[in-house]
Image (cartoon, rainbow, N blue to C red; front, side, top):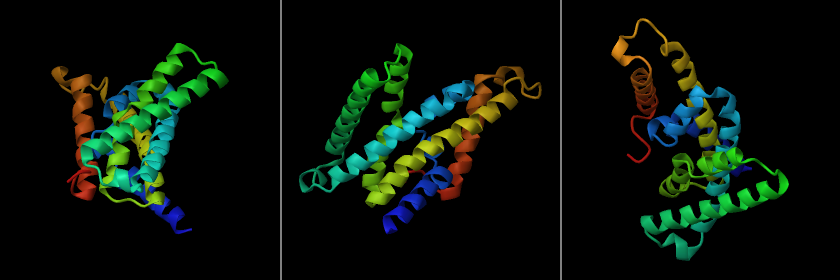
Length: 197
């Protein structure tokens, strides 16, 4: 039962305290894109949650193998990236067989699978020497953190996009980047450091 509480604690930590979108910048581009298209947020976030959790679990299992555990960081990254590609291809093939999706869905699936947030999770789990439960929690929590980040960016975007209080040169994209930077500093300030510090 301890693994379950480890998973919940890691998920809570990934969502609230160490939001990888803000503190590490992982998946930030996609979060900003989803802020401007909130109708697509939950389908995209669902795919990111799926890929981040499954990749975290499989990569953590592989980390227990002595031959992989002894490898350096670069080799681990290549192994984790290969795992992610395999998961993507299996998911893509199953989607084509079962769902018969359109081309737009398959493009979104690829974007979510190759998201920097998804690719960072196994490396972060390895670096922090996470337990199996914590690895699941980090994967799931990071996907939920993507939703939180996208919603916060969306709320800010709707408020600042057409505000007359913002000087003309800063309206639109510049204001958005300043807003995201302030959010990032706030989240990073909670922990006092970034992910890899």
